[in-house]
Image (cartoon, rainbow, N blue to C red):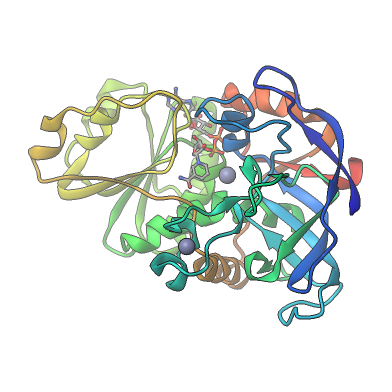
Length: 347
Ligand code: NAP
Ligand code: ZN
Ligand code: ZN
């Protein structure tokens, strides 16, 4: 077993604190990586505080992992020691269902194995995430990350990146389309970058006046302050697609009214409390309310390669491991520009 250092939540009310544990010895198909950086996703807060129910403790959060390969099992073909690699939101899946066979492991019909807050596939132990110095993962679930991208700025691509890239691609956001991005945090800032890069007309919706100038730099053609009823009304019926990244409760009906006929609003943010959607918000205009969950392995690799080629990465604030609880508190006040990333050298 590999003695490992990390940070964990011991219960839904305890802070994230130092925690030692053991990882498995790398098997024949495994990659053992030394973690250099881990992004801080709002999901880490939802799960460590059990906001969605069913959380498993102790919990070592973190699913935006960047590291360097230390050793590989004898059957590993994709990686060699020294490679820069990433691990995202899941570390295993059934590998046999139709979704897995299509490279949509994120929609595995027998449930993917989350990088943390999940049981190991044999049901005997818990999986621990990226707030730690090393991890062992089957090579199928490890991604190649170009040395062209700064490793700290690459970490958020493994969740915030793919979670926004995938729906923007699936619903064909591009030239001639007017696209809204709701919420300017970790996911939101990546959505602005991708939608702009894909050639769409991009509108950012924010509750934070102090983020307006940044939104434009990140790729928004226009910014709407969602707390202004006049600004919201002025946009009625004009959007082809809206991506909602908000982590807390808010009124979806207000955004559905901004869609054109046959427009689509996609939820990626998952607030604790279910939303109330009036049927009238959808029936008048034959509108669609859809959702999307991270992305499969082939598309995650495609997104990472796209970022390397187009010079896209996250805007990060690097923090030492010991500042994680402060980072959570700041995220809950919308004070994030635009992703906290933990420097694992400080662990
Ligand atoms: P984040 O960095 O904390 O950003 C969330 C943003 O939402 C805030 O910065 C804020 O932006 C806006 N917001 C917060 N409270 C709001 C409120 N009451 N009303 C309106 N806007 C509000 O969070 P994140 O890491 O991007 O994650 C966002 C959500 O996506 C979380 O629920 C997370 O669990 C979920 N998620 C889902 C997936 C998936 O696969 N579907 C993957 C990753 C994360 P402004 O300051 O601009 O208003
Ligand atoms: Zn995440
Ligand atoms: Zn499957």
